[in-house]
Image (cartoon, rainbow, N blue to C red):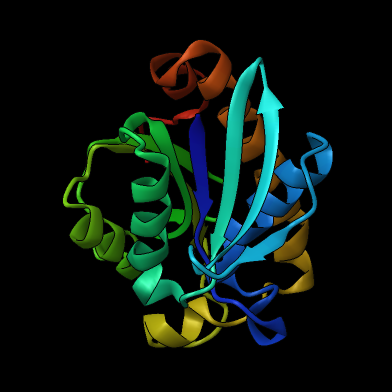
Length: 195
């Protein structure tokens, strides 16, 4: 079993905000891979969808705990599945340090200030899992610099929406390669090391 977690905030208000890129990637995966409909599982505090990729059972999960408490949902699911992390836990999240349009796959790394990832590490007591960092940083800020907390909760503008759609597709392909061929091959294919 592989558990793929997309990070974001629940509710219409946050639906197309930068912080919800993890949810967007999972929605695309669920839709294109023929996974089951999303169901809210209260014991996990998450929406769940199940399917198969390359003969592997996959569980998609969108924590409904709000970003800063994502670890509560992740811990509940891992404990229930008795899942070993490492190659079996994939986390998809927005990243302010990467430019919009870029993704980077990392493994066994610290949270680098991302509150959702920090919550997961604190709850499950390990950083040994795979992360798909999806860039949301603006190349040339066209507005005065805002607080990070405000910026991540803004919606993408029209120009950014086109880029993010392509990035979501790219991230789905990267997840597919990771499942079928392993993390190292996915890193070699999708990481741009100058980031």
